[in-house]
Image (cartoon, rainbow, N blue to C red; front, side, top):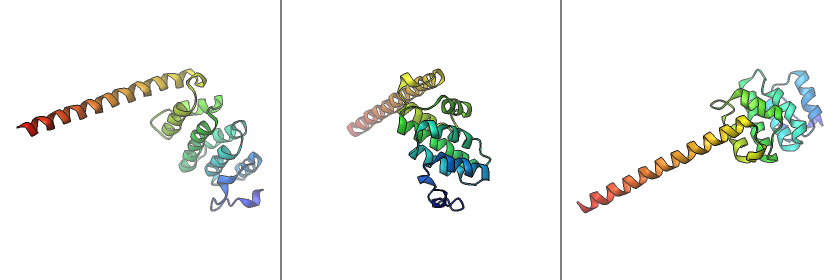
Length: 154
């Protein structure tokens, strides 16, 4: 029910569970649509939430756009998959910006076999980079331990 949501303060918007309420608020030009789309990601099916998340990713307010990308990350976590439209929107935004964490959530929670080709390549890149970084840090710790042992002997 629309009266349960306070669009001015944002109160209750994380509980929004009717895509029609979000659509009506979008038509009215409400300010907290990004916040509400997180609620849709939590409370609606992926098929219902996805087009609204994509639409919210193009809102004029940068903060609300950021919440839309957060909603995409939550959708990946909750459903273990994303729609082709959400994959396309995340790819269009690219890593390194507001989509960095949702892309990482997607790579972490969507099975590799369900990823489109760009995300599979990204998964390989991130996995190799993380492994190399891990080896680098461990080698640094090993050298530091050896240096301490040598200093104790002196």
